[in-house]
Image: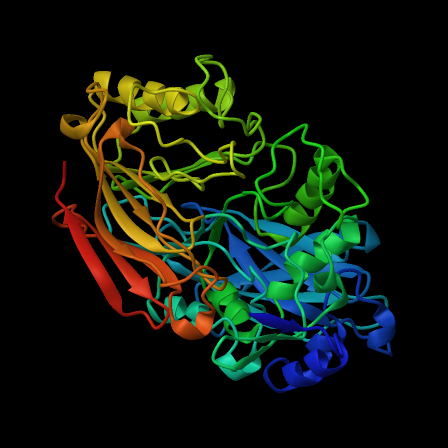
Length: 511
């Protein structure tokens, strides 16, 4: 594969104008200057998004090109007649002119419509309209989708490909919410104007300044998150489907862990903790997630049928080494989160307990020749290293007779269904469970990875590309869909391709 670096910005911007429109191209990246929009009327530059929709609340997000007051009208009616007005924050340079409002006192289990505008010194912006679905409190049918890994390995927004069109396929499934399983951006993966594939096909990326190098500054991290919202399918999806977002490695840099010092000539700032602080601020500015003050891990309830435990497997992550230690206090979660997860599983009365783990349980994910990035390390024997942490979670849940645990993950850039059974495992004190893998959403396709035998996994289904970093043109882009039937309480998982075709289906009966 060859990469053409000529005309890095010129042709990339020109190629993007057809799908994105000149206005959005001009405001690409972080800290877009108000000079791009003369006059006194603010412009909402990157659409609207919603996230963490509960039974009675949700976060709504937007970004303006200049200072102003964020205003949100909310209604049960699509025409927003009689809408309730919620006054949001004053948007300013301190947050890159982004802002979020938590809508409260919403009715449960309903589609809610909202309209966002920003009120400037003289005029208000043109409004943008979005919608979201609140979580139910009763036994209702539930549908959601999940995937991860967006704009990675050099594959950015390509108008000739239809942009990030997998988001149109997910939107067509009309999900209640979207679980984004991490790698929401590739801050360590610069784009080039074009990429020439082995067959001579040329992939053309829309370019912004922030995507031309690895992110180091706060503004460069902001530009990573802003970039995805330049894509029409992504932006339309975000305006209609509330998100549940996870934090993984490429939001900062590949395979990072706290305290790491980079050995990478692309970076002038080598301290990963400094980079992570900057990325975390940009993440909370640009992602519709509750404010920075609390932990990223959290539980979201969807009535009596579903609890979603959203893990943070990065903030307390230990050093990437051989992952064969015997210290039970090391790991990916940290003691506080591990205890929160165990206690939450024990207390949950939901039929299904979905654990959103952005790093897979049984797949070996190396970090170089001698270190490990994930939970497993390839030794099929008794739990060691980070496996100890998850053995504790599984053992405690088993002893408390917790049922209905399902793991959903991404990260490895292919899709698979894994069944774990103590009859095949090195340890027997856990209840059999499934882990479903999906992705990438819009990135290079890889895999499959080796399975570690410690917890007795069986690869029931795998769909992976024939070569590493296969382009989206080849079709190995995936998302997963979960449907829970209110009457039978069965949970059905479909692993779908870029166009929404089901490649694999598994129905789990009520436990």
